[in-house]
Length: 130
Image (cartoon, rainbow, N blue to C red):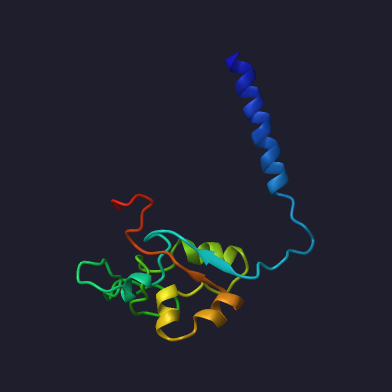
């Protein structure tokens, strides 16, 4: 029984890999990207949250390796984060801006329509206790 299951999994895996390798001749552009998540996706929302105990990514080493930046970006990494890589894969130049950043500069609606918005916030969780 174990051999049959293993064989089925192998065949299914090969089929998925074969289908994933097929690319249509014309890829459609995704119109906008909306990001939800925690610090692995946060592009600056936490820097706009009130309170002294909120984790912030506004220290000099956050963003130091991000091309064209060299300064804190609000990302909890020294360069690109997961949201940036997904955005590039989907055909965007960069990931959408942070919701609270757009709201603070009254640019929320135009950006949400054309590029999307990042709602990701470091420390976010699905449980009330988080």
